[in-house]
Length: 92
Image (spheres, rainbow, N blue to C red):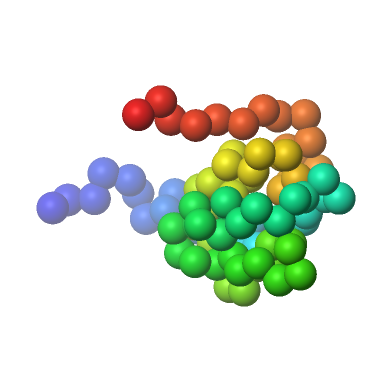
C-alpha cells in the first residue's frame, strides 16, 4: 500500500502526540469515591485502585480518556484541560 500521509507529517504528529500520552498528566480530585470504574474501563489496564483511589501504573496510555468519561463523580482530570468539559458515553 502506498502511504497517504507524507512521512514528515507522520513524524511531526508523533512528536506532538508522544509527550501528552503519559499518565503523569492525570490527577484525581477529592470527589473520588473509589468505585473502580476507571480501572475496569481502562483498555490497557494502566490503572489500579490503591487506598480507594486510582493509581496509574503504566507510564503511557492510549488517550482514550475512558477513565475520565466513566467516572461518576468526574474526579479524574487531565491537567487543567478537562475542568469545564462534560463526559461522553457512546450510545450503544
